[in-house]
Picture 1 (cartoon, helix red, strand yellow):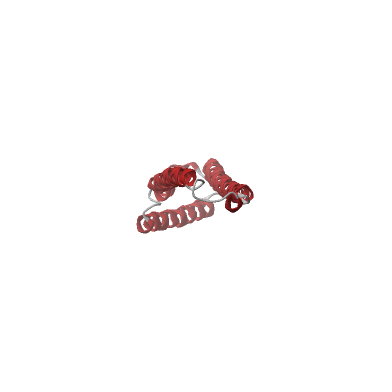
Picture 2 (cartoon, helix red, strand yellow; picture 1 turned 120 degrees about the horizontal axis):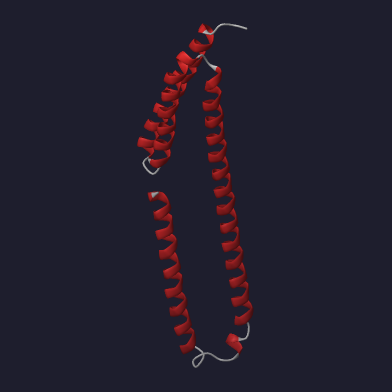
Amino acid sequence: MGFVFDIATLAGRLFVGMLVLLETGRRLGLRRPAQDSEAAQAGFGVVEGAIFALMGLLIAFTFSGAASRFDTRRQLVVEEANAIGTAYLRLDLLPASAQAALRESFRQYVEARLDTYWKLPDIVAAKKALAQATQLQGRIWNQAIAACQGAPHL
């Protein structure tokens, strides 16, 4: 959450800075015509149009890249949530004696995964939470294998 706020703050400051510099340039430009000849300003409109076109393209590419990264991230989160949900539902296939412990391990795993995302601006803490989630994932796998080996075969 802090990372998004930092980018939003930076974008806001850049926007305000651009407005201030635009206004400064406008005021300086209003003073110059009296000093410059007509020939010096003849090609200024074309240059100004080209600069604005390039700025528009830059902004468009920036927003396009940000939108595609956001969509990709959202899709990955949805896929992970679906995988966890599917695995949780498949616990019903195991013997009833093993289900309660595995369900609790799954709850801890989901909390560890969420904790990883909540701590993301702090990379060290996020890696620690991710390591805990990986450890829980291994424990869930071992519990599931043990439950399957103890189940009667049909």
